[in-house]
Length: 209
Image (cartoon, rainbow, N blue to C red; front, side):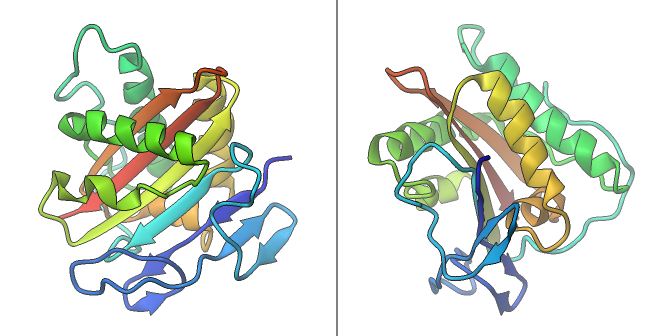
């Protein structure tokens, strides 16, 4: 069973690593697993490619109201030669479908950021360090808060889109990944990289303006 690693910051309550325009401090990562929470863990368990990880920074822990709905996944569509084009849309759509079950409105897709998020996925796969490139795409918007969920080393894009996203959502309130997914982010983008060994790394970044 894949362990779930999470890190979150909710408003001024710092639980783990964060990036914020108001607070640039870095704290300890908090790990969790389906069997129960274990504090003081790391986003890299030494067994890269086995666990999704989440980081959250700044003002992303709030709850957004509004009308439940699906993703604006087709907005700002990418290149017609993009091998992950459909997967990017499905990633955002699935996130927004899950948000809708809680009465939350959709987070718009930030298509222009996807090449940068692809680069994060590639970089993390090469280092074996989930969230190692967390800071690399912060400049995609004029942000107040930023968060990241990561699915490292999955067997296929389908597994990352299904098993990983659903496992993150299943954490429920207080789970770092879940809190990122239901937060008040104003933009999101999904990036992908497939290693020479065929392992898929997927990253979903969230920004709050």
